[in-house]
Image (cartoon, rainbow, N blue to C red; front, side):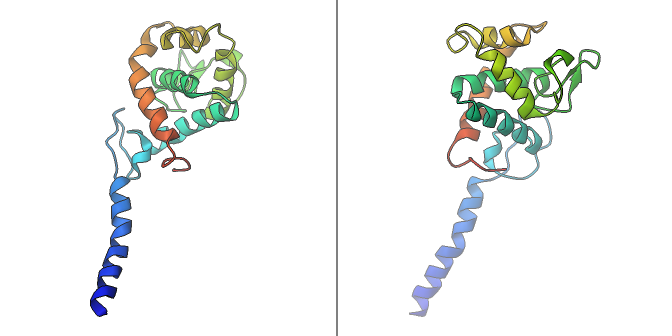
Length: 171
């Protein structure tokens, strides 16, 4: 009887360790230091992952699917590396999407800037079937219109990881 209890106790005690191994820290492909946490960060720092979740959450609120999310995440990777504190273009472009003053207030808030990005994206003819770089460029009007393409594969991974059932609600 004692042996069965001991084995059962050991089996139960091992469950948190097994779960923890699935949530091991990842290296940050963006080059930043990764704070120990879960694999639900898709190779992002905790700040980048939080920004990505905000961008993806707005897409969900607006009823937009995976394609819109991938375009948005690829855009933020190119524009700011998913860093809401990034300032460019002589101090004019700010936030994860590097939006200029004509985009409105609160451009450093990832959710607000995502809402503005998606609102413009859905007005682009055939945005959901165009190459990613064309759809992103139609919204952003970047000086480097083809630069978004290099982030598509990583954006797909980030969207898939952060949108997965096992990562929903992870921080």
